[in-house]
Every structure is written in structure tokens, then in C-alpha cells.
Length: 68
Image 1 (cartoon, rainbow, N blue to C red):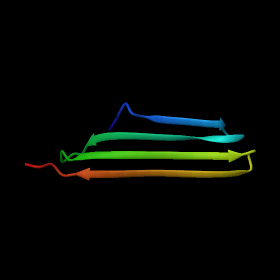
Image 2: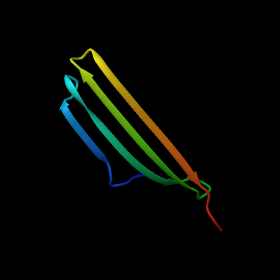
Image 3: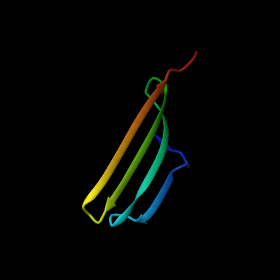
């Protein structure tokens, strides 16, 4: 798989103290059967004074069949 050059990162506040970060990555690849695979990864995390936190991770993959 190849990581596309569109990785988006956003940091807000002071991470792990009073803030967090968001990351989004997209990848593309080929299977053994020459089908196309796209992968999207999203990670979000925030924390308030090392006590109250929120985590969100999403990983989606799509496979497209080759047209002949």
C-alpha cells in the first residue's frame, strides 16, 4: 500500500493536558488479483487534565474489482 500525500493533521490546545489532535490518512494499493484497494484511517483524541478523555479511531477499506 502507498500512503497518498494528503495526510492531514490538526493539533488544538495542548495535547494530553487541555486539547488533542486529529489525523486523517488515505492509502491506495493493489491485491494479488489486481483489484484496487483504498484505505481511509481517521484518529481523534482529546484529553482534559489527564483524566477525562475521548478517543475515536476509524479504519475503512474498500476493494474495487478490475474491469476487463
